[in-house]
Image (tube, rainbow, N blue to C red; front, side, top):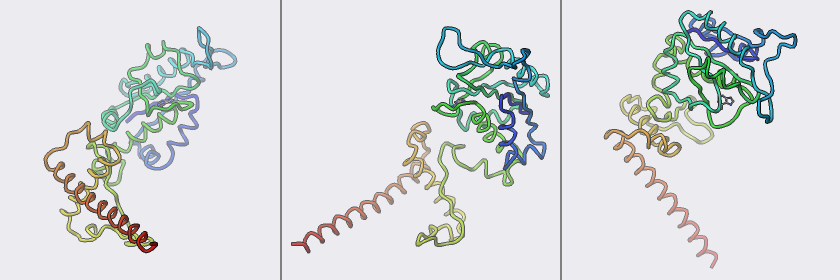
Length: 267
Ligand code: ADE
């Protein structure tokens, strides 16, 4: 994948892209990362990249020309015409589905804004898509660009050691991850669920599916509302919910009995 990032802070992007999974992908040539600084495309002696908004209001905006020329330079450098994405809180929310689609693009330009945003004409002239990483406002688009890059790069063939791990995990099929455990078997009185030690792969797979369903039902019911369960998943969820309810009811009754017992002793 060829990835151009347009940013006033290329050193921030370069440093973050140097470590971990992304760093390895860059060093192995799986990702060809290029940085383009709008400040390099200014013509005045102060190398201005921002100016105050017409109509007044707080803060500054990024000017069109340096941004446009940085994107132009990226286009010229890219092996095939890149899709241009501008990171902004006004964009469409990024989800795993969109990440997965974008990771199949051969070349992409990610534009990170600063200040209060960019002149709207830049968006009209050069941007194919606006994306947001969440409903909160950051001081620049660099972190969102890095978030998007990280999420895409780990899906590229050859990046994760175990190809299955990217496929299998959270969000891809609309469920949260099942819980996982590693050695030791007992941590401060908390044992690993016994079934995981059984060596019964079918039972383990069933338990994991059931836990993924349970966790999603508890923590992200909105995800289940968007994705109707098939018959097998519905049965698995019903089964585990029945178990959990029984256990929680049992604990609740035991607690009531204990307080009642304590009260009687007081009298
Ligand atoms: N720039 C500032 N905040 C942002 C966000 N939440 N998503 C994408 N780009 C941003």
